[in-house]
Image 1 (cartoon, rainbow, N blue to C red):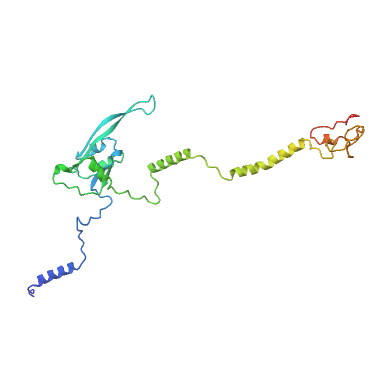
Image 2: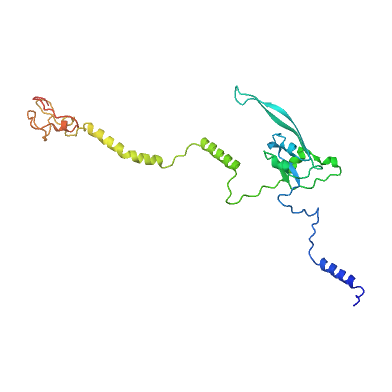
Length: 266
């Protein structure tokens, strides 16, 4: 059967009409920024505070596109009589991205975490010589580095974080004074209360009791008209010549023996 003239054109128009009614999947760059993966190898960022100028990244780079310049400075001794030390100070850190092949070897061999991958990719230049970016530009790209992924719930805490947390807790414990419980003093006083009461009662028994108003030494007691001496009221105290009964005042004192009174002694 011979094809109908114009059938191919009709099929093409049908496909075009069908596609026009569907939602577009094309990202309108640069108006809409693309969603990049967290580990996108866009550009290399530099955290220069961690750089010790060990030159490992420059030696291991297969393209020799990393340029580092530095000088040495003398650090005075921290204690009197100590030895002075020298350290490397970074002067220049540049990467030629016209030679870089984005292998990531420099980031892997850095022992002090000074280099990171950044998802930035908009660093095109009209001149190839401008693709050598210095440390100031690399520093700006450092703030676009995404945060590392979270650890698994059952994973161990990183050793660096654990060591820093233990050190902080130890310093905080040394600086803060020990906190005593609010009821600790009250409990100690309650425990010492009965002991003090017994001691006070023992001291009271050792001391002689104060005389009563009816005792012979009281100034208000009547005296005899003949001798002028105070007369004592009748009591259970034995007479002066009676040695058969001990003196009750002497027996009240612990550790003392009753002594007989002599005749004529009051």
